[in-house]
Length: 117
Image (cartoon, rainbow, N blue to C red):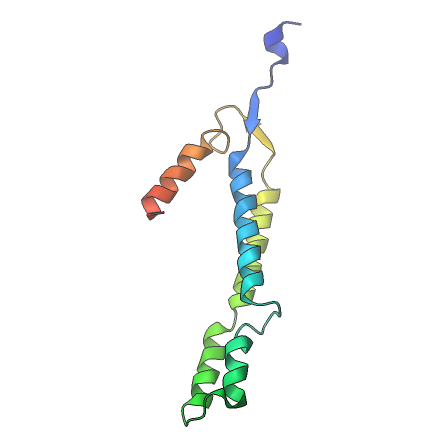
């Protein structure tokens, strides 16, 4: 068997690594916002509702705050699930020259550059 017959013609899937990093970031952000699903407004709303802000508008403002924040924790959960599903669908290694392989670094850089990061 010739040496070229045994060469690995794959490269690491760097896109998969990006998905893993994004998932970790989403999990950390979700956990930073709240440790109680469905209670994202509680750290702000509860002290205000318990006398921290006494005025005619307080109850309406707290209700509006809670309505604005409804679903934020669900959105983070959806993001984490979406990223995990995409990650699970990627192979650890891809054929040489695949856009998700070593070329992904340049592609990702251009995406970030165009988005102003």
